[in-house]
Image (cartoon, rainbow, N blue to C red):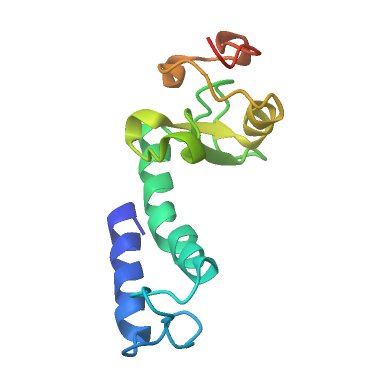
Amino acid sequence: MDAVELFEEGKRWIRAHYKEGCCPKCGKPLPKRRQTWCSDECRDWWWNTFHWGMITKRIMARDNFTCKICGRAQGSGVRLAVHHIRPWSVSRDNSDGNLITVCYDCHAKLHANDNWKLMVDAKKCRKLEDFKWGDRNG
């Protein structure tokens, strides 16, 4: 299933499970000011299952299913993730230019260093040393 098909499946899922005034995930009544999901937990479940899945498939395909830091390709024990160059909590940016494919090992190293000021052109980097570590203000 490609990214567009996954997103369409997510929309079909909502339609199939939607009842007026109820959360499609758990069926609880919607609180005031909520239109689709009763809670952030139910919304996040859908996001992670369908919408984020669509984005990750597109980004991994763009990056040829290869870690843009170490160059390892998916398969033979290598698992990939999509990483926000500028963190979502800071930028609220899911654009293609803010996302890169990384293997789980490199992803763990990126988060262990807590460095959110990575080079904007990080998708061109091939190894961890290409990133600017340590200086979060510069």
